[in-house]
Image (tube, helix red, strand yellow):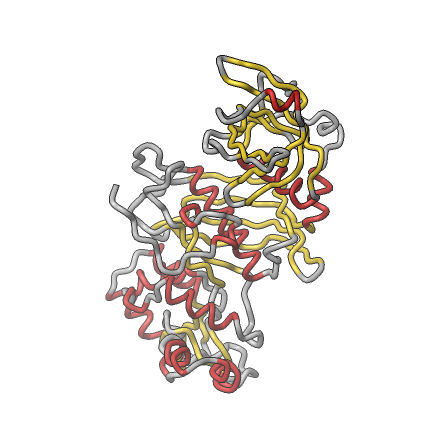
Length: 422
C-alpha cells in the first residue's frame, strides 16, 4: 500500500505512552480558544511574550476592528476586546431579519441562530453568546454562508500553543484533537476496511484524553500511572475513512492532588463532518508510580514463579559465559523471574558441566529494555531430539536487572499454558 503522509502536528509518543511513532493516533491537540481577550491584556501582556512572527500570526485571528468589536450586554462593562475573527459578534437586528428572508432560511436554522445570538434591544443588535463550541461555530458559519471565515484546526492548535504560555489569559477546560487514521496500521487495518474500526476509535479517544491530561493538567510523564475505572460509549454513525475525525473532551468532574489531576470523569465526543458520531465516557484516576507497583504485586501468585515462553523474535538472544570466560550463544525456551530453560548451542560441551563447573554468567538482550545480566547455576540438562536442553537457576542479579527482567517478561513473553494452573 502507498505510504500515508502524517499530519504535521502529531502528538509526541511520550504523551500517549507509546514506544513507536506508528501507534500514535492523535494530532492537533489543543484547548478551546477564548473568543475575546481584553485589549490591555492582549497588547500589554500577550504580545510582549511572543516573538515577532508569533505576534503577526495571532493578530491575523484576533482583531479589535470596530465591525468585530465585542460589546458586552452588561452596560457597566466598558472594556474593549480583541475578538477571535471567526464569527460575526454583532448582527444588526434589521439586517438579521432581512437576511432570514433573503437567504430563505428554514425555521430550524432561524431557531438555531437565535440559540447562539441574544437580542439586545437597547443596542438594536443580535450579540453572539460567549460559550460557543467549535461545532456550533461551524453550524453558524454554514447557515450564514461565511465558511471562508473558518479557522483550520492546525491554526487553532498553533494559537492554543501560544496562549497556553500566557497564564493571565482565562482558560476553558474543553479540549479538541483530531484522529490520525493510519490506513497502513498493521493491527487496525490488517484486512481492508471501508470505515474506521471501532477499536481504533476507542484507542484514539483514550490517547487523546491521556495526552490532554499531561499537557493541560500537569500530570508528570514519569512516576505517575493512569488507572481506568470504566469506559462507556455508543456509536451513532460509521466514521468514514476520507473525512477528518475530531474529538472534544469535556470534564464532568475532576479532582487534584500534588498539583495534578488525581480523578477524572470525562466525556469524549467524536465528530465527523460536523455531526456527532459517538460519545464515550472515561472514569479513572492517577496514582504515584511506587503505589502502582505495590498494587501490582500479588505475593501469592509469585510464591511459585510461573514460566513464560519467549516470543519468536528472541533467537540466540542469551549468552552464557563459563569459568574460562568463553561465550556460548543459546536459545531461550522459557523464563521466569527466578530462572530459565535454554536450548544449548552446538559449541557447548555438556561434559564440562559435570566435570568442571555448573556456574555461569548470563547476558540477555531485550529490545527497548536493554541487557539483563546476572549469575546462574545449571540444575538439570537432558538430550532431546539430538539437542541438549538445560535448566538454570538465577543465583545473583541486581535489583535494576530483576526489574528489567520482569518488565521484559510482561512485554515480550506469554504464559506456558501447558505447565501452569491459570
